[in-house]
Image 1 (cartoon, one colour):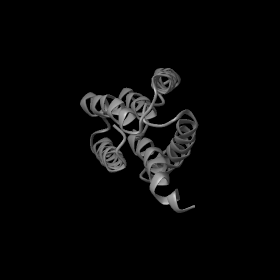
Image 2 (cartoon, rainbow, N blue to C red):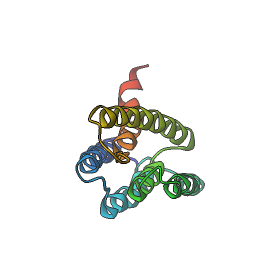
Image 3 (spheres, rainbow, N blue to C red):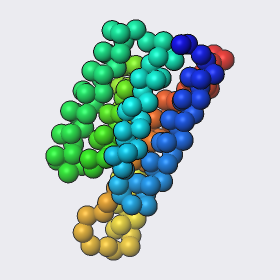
Image 4 (cartoon, rainbow, N blue to C red):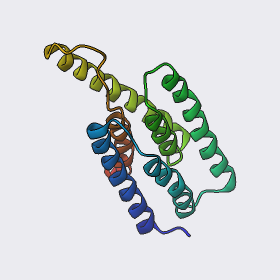
Length: 156
């Protein structure tokens, strides 16, 4: 079922969903299960469009599970929300293992910058309590950075 145009449309749709997730997370500090499910369930359609072999699909599933388990630890430590964990794991289904690792690194850097910025703003406003961090923004940044490489690096 390999079709470059269809594959590109799937990636553009994924990018749009990531932007939507980031905006919703900034507004509500939640990422819906429906959105996460849409990202996860559309990954097999993408796999068929590239085309990915059965062992490759198993590797993608394993990567998604590994990301989920690692980030679930961050959830239990109170560092991430459940929707954030599910979105990152669903997104890992779209990237090969090396790009998943790159995604996680970019997401972590963006999350650190975002957290420092919000902490600085929180303290400058002299607010009490612990600020909420819309980590979906960092996840979207990491995912979009990986997605844009496909289009920007094709001429190299």
